[in-house]
Length: 571
Image 1 (cartoon, rainbow, N blue to C red):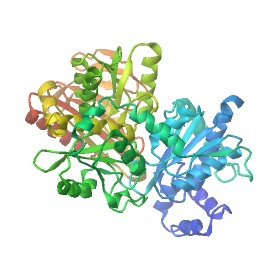
Image 2 (image 1 turned 120 degrees about the vertical axis):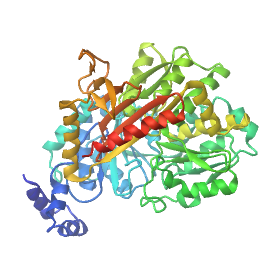
Image 3 (image 1 turned 30 degrees about the vertical axis):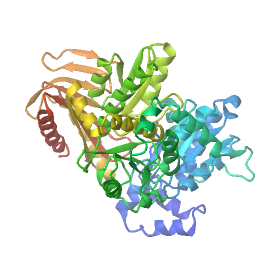
Image 4 (image 1 turned 60 degrees about the vertical axis):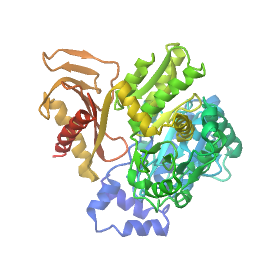
């Protein structure tokens, strides 16, 4: 069936409301728009679905969500009656239509005879991961597009370990979706044969108890509590309640919330993008922090799995820390706090992704920890944690990735802004007790461990043509692997698709542990690492520049040089 035929079939469907049909009628003379909405289904992967909202097979709407849920229900049913009766936890964030999509998913699961635990209101993503593990569910669904702009929504799917769906299960869901009719496939009847149980305050309390179990030095907070101030913003999202509550229980007396951004709103009216990676979103928080004389600012994204910091540089100005810098600070602090309190486990391990700063490895190894890399995504970090701990090879004290995600403890298997907010606040208070800001602390770490600098380049390629350009870029790099970049020789070419390593000097080949992901890496003669990978959730190719040097100026110069090369890849 052509995209035009699919468009006509949707227009003719009795399932659509008058308003939905009007949306499709409005594009009847826009061939490009019709094609972009109907050329394919949204691709279902290990991260589930994500896309812009609207009518069409390549859009997030009640029908694509119902379609995916029916396919997922059939995968769960295939696990057998014992697995089915464990049920599925369902959660949602603050985005437009999130509650509607979540309730539709819950109803379809129940109509397939699968019990559901549905949160009574929006909740942070890590609390869903926690609930799956806490209640022994077979799976979980979270309706969220994380930190994406307001036009997006998504559908994240989790398995029994609380991590995102394994590839084999994701492949099964995708296969069934191709076989199911979007409108006739999903099962709906009244009443549903399986129960939908609501989750609320009881689950919150259990989750918060675990988050506060990660506190190592509450005395550090008590020591400065009368004068120590911080500003918090949830960017209109799900962190608005649990994060301030957790910080209060930590012992914080002065958590100043940004009032305009404490309002739940899927249109994110005060920011262009509700992403703590973007410093411009913090402008309201900065105004308050300057006025109140705050020590630092903390912001969580709409589904409260990512967290970002801005730190007082000591002169009343505030500087954004990168996810890499925050992670290095937190790792170094946790190692110190665990050693001070005698809680550092045997065989301690730090985990990071392949695109995360190599400074984390240096911090870990100098302090006697092992450090392992995984592919990008917390399902891989969770998988590695489980493998190391089950085998007795190591005990993971922290897992993180450069894009502002941090996982602590053993009760979630995803990034967790609630627990990270508690740990980062404890850390900031401890440094305040040493008469240091977090900015002072970061500079001290560079003096101790050496200078590192990173930048992520986002080569945006929107639309149908963009998907082709992304594929072509990766294909061209594989067909003609660079031997020199920005005037510097490439020492090693690594392809994580097949796990191959090529030494450029003599052409010798070897293999590495990681394989099966569409990522290329170049180890440069000057010590820089360059990683190129297409985003799994947005229309862009990312280039990660990981540099180090004798001082800050040398690092910055390397980053600038390779940033120019990255821009040239767009063609």
